[in-house]
Image (cartoon, rainbow, N blue to C red; front, side, top):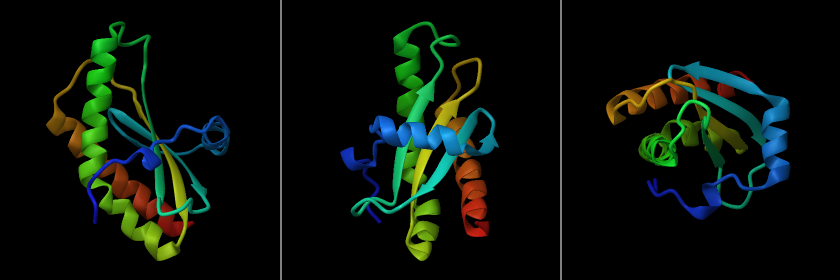
Length: 128
């Protein structure tokens, strides 16, 4: 499996983002909240990702961007967890990862949270 994070994997469409937040199925793994909506498979991409860090919590853009980079890297390394299930079901997913923590945390904690959250998400996708 390719461990890159390509332009096609980023969720940019306003229509799809609205769709993601209107269907609003979620999984929680502190300090991350995973919001997802099943979608038809777009091209070769099974999943499209949106990452959000609150401006209210982190006033400086440097801190917000740092947290987004850590989340993106953790997802990039561990996205294979859900890609197996999506290939099996031949479906796609819109995924939003929202950082809900109140302070900056280390990469190891974020990666552990991502692995835990993606595993919960995998179980949830299998059920539906």
